[in-house]
Length: 266
Image (cartoon, rainbow, N blue to C red):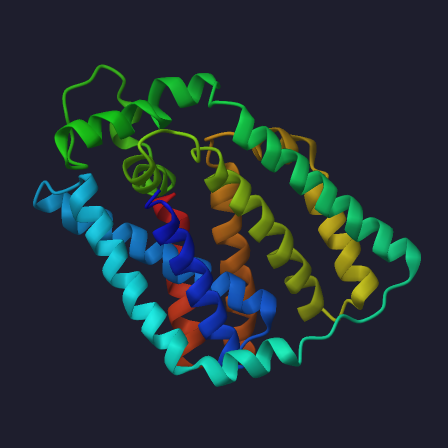
């Protein structure tokens, strides 16, 4: 069950970034996702050059990253303890609490569907998942002979993430969760953008509701398609563009560049 390693790495990045108190909870979530996405790309491309896309190499790589992050969390444990100790939940009016509950319910139901239903769309069968099997067989993401050219020229980041999980888990049980995670990230990011445009708590919740109830978004939230993934990176791009315009600096410029690069790669 070594698929827990990349998942742990994401949450470790999230907690570390939040403990620095540079970004809020939602901003830290977006930043952690961008760092994680960059790592997935780097690991896949570098191991692919040496034809090492296999269980042993990927598990060792994520294991080393997880050990480093564990050491960092242990070293910074006092700040992290204070962070969670001071965590407070502001009271919400009943109607806003109800809307927030509806968003959580929608996301939870889609998660159940993503877990119980295997990938079954035509795109999944023809190139999203089929090229992952070719990569696993060849231990590389280099081009290979095929008459389905979409397996070669369609932008591959989402499948890079699926590839990591499929190798570490040994099956495609988590294949739908890259889209689901991106749906959650898009909802959080859109509400954060609304905050940047001076929306109050009610406005941010209504933004989250609008994002969570897009019909096509609900349908694709439990699939291996890439629309939510691309949307998430574009949401990150918009948010960090706003942040960079307000407070130019290295962190915001790096996150902006990472978001643009990952969007193009997706």
